[in-house]
Image (cartoon, rainbow over all chains, first blue to last red; front, side, top):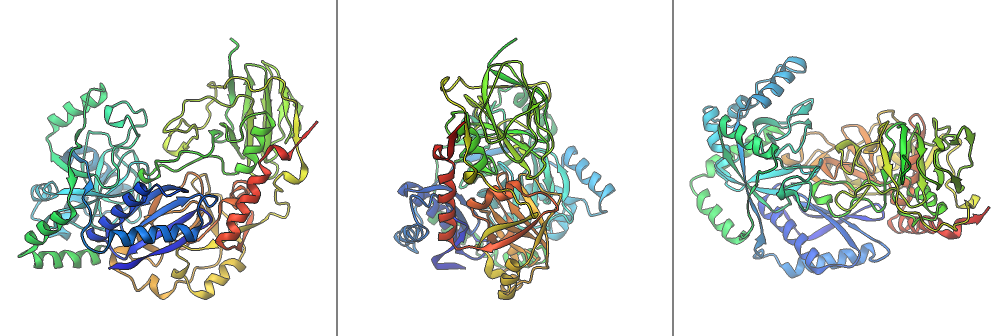
Length: 302
Length: 327
């Protein structure tokens, strides 16, 4: 559901939460990103930072430069100017991330949890079971078949929330309960309907299915992709997973180690929300039954 | 070898370099601002040594470090009283101290309060990371907490003629003596996920600070939260628990509710997550969060957005040269 006008909620003296709707939905998330870029372009005096999320954004502001009421008026004005119709094209980089599915390191992590915490179904098999996927090979094909949208980043530096742009690749999974105390750096996980790439060795709750040798976070800023930040992704980027075998994994890892690895980043594309929408409705014809089945599973998984 | 630095003999408990305004501009990628929790005491320490008030200085937590000065320096210690000594002689807090190369500054455990700040003339000159020297220790960004045997580079001397100063009594934060902190708190963003009755009860209760607290958050123990209808009657993507909400941004100071455990998110807190934030502690009350100790109590004082903004302005006024007196 998308609200007619944004809802403004105070977070103390210098933060404002702006809710644009209720639910996890592409159109809603695009509107969040589109409003965030409008706010940035407008360079509203006193706005310090924006954290766009799935259906809302957090705004930090300096009350000495703009009042809460004036800030909400400005944002309402930009929201109205954007209208309810077409969403302008968004600049969106496309990253190709090589991944080894069902790799030995996430296996070890899963086995460690199964031995010490809870005897759960191994993560890839659980994902297959819940999503009516025949086997691991089919899971790999399905998971790697779609481009993913970086809907938000947060919780840990560089940790991304990815939504598959192709509904046919929509997979769901419950989160670990209790959470894991450690996850290998570079592990790929699925939780709810979101995929994430663990930027560092951290605790975690998503079901694990793969690992990438490519860093998405680099506190040393060694590789060229990190010259402007320690984190690879920004909200509104897109990601494609490129399945690789162990030999290529080791080769890429060695190039990351020696500092010569260059990320595959396409920087010259705009993302047309309108054309995406019409493509999406084209492919959804005949997929209706599958999608509603997916929805039920989300409800079970949550 | 003498150099423009400070040598770490004992690191203390997660003593780290902090700076203001912190790491700004990377929040949307998940980087918290970090910076000192008690910016009031932090800024006064800098002013006492002739630095700009937001210059990089040390934040000590519960147990302070032992440091050997490698050059002549003016230093000042503010915040919690960790019985600072220079070559075994007690030195005054809230006051500029001229020290010579080779002397040893030692802080011990905090008698009251939790965080002390040590500023050096010229400031600390570690390499900025993403625009700031503030350390986010848990993710090792901008460095880590101090380690024994390492050195901290100092910036160039400030004004050599700078005359020692002290902070006027009425411009210093008063550390709680009755172990009860009255902390200003603004309803929202998600106060409507709780019952109206609980919105009252929250401000009437005394909350106990748990031991499991650090620079990411302060955990509290208190009465059971009572959820309004919308915490149960919601779309499945919000998650199952009444405290779950669709992933959203977390304001600093949020009283973040995970299940039944409220955690006040402070300087190194996660930027986003899937739990509600019914209340938010405003910036003007952060110094209290920085000085409150496990086992002590917090009673929240209902504050409006504009009152919270006035509070921040007043506090900002204290952290100015007008608060200093000649000694």
